Length: 312
Image 1: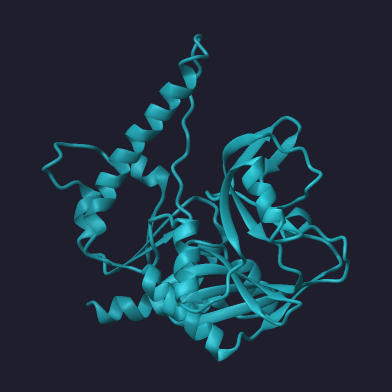
Image 2: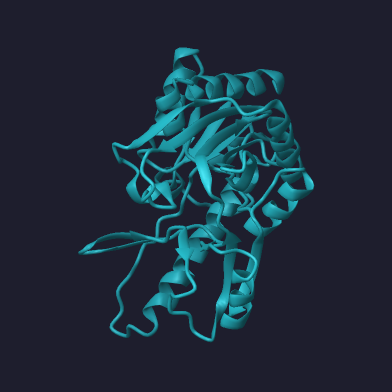
């Protein structure tokens, strides 16, 4: 049996599920809501989910998140702490439930990758990376400006979305200039050499196969992070084939990281070199599939079926 653990209303999973059904494979769908509905009993007794999980051969984790069930308290000082504790309680219970799927073949990882470890591994795999630093003082930052005229800064962790009545806010990759206001000291921050690019490349990796798309812009004032204007009319997304040498190095990197899938960001610089930026183990691929007619959802469904049959 194939199981998919996901968040409700994910178009990518819906498309893969439709292909699975087309190929006459009905998967088990695991969502937070369904886990909430599990009737708890003595932990040594086998509830319905645990019984069904023993039949699993393949598990695909796709962008599963645990919602924050917030409660409001009169004492606002303790409210963040209490809500954080409640989420941790729920996480512990869900991890217990999912521990019964360890025997299944996991086609995607539940773990979050450390961007610094990934960059180090990419360099060892032979991929070029921008010159990268961690700094926490103005003095150290200005020493980097002696090496590189332009640098960028971006989060080391996953970007968080902040939503209020005025809109949605997210942290993006930004160019940092010498004339920007910079305090004498600040929390450890990620600084990278700015690469003058011809175009960006988004690659979805599925077990040794690379599906790549070039993202081209025709405006010199275009944001350094294309997500800031993702629907711009002056942006083109076209199918792209990486050199065999680069694809092999990506495969070596993913093997080292023990990742079977992932979305990879690269830059093709004006110096005619490919630069590796980062990998998201559970990155979106529907946009890439749509623009390039790759039908990745179909191939993903076939891969799930293949492992289901091989583990029977």
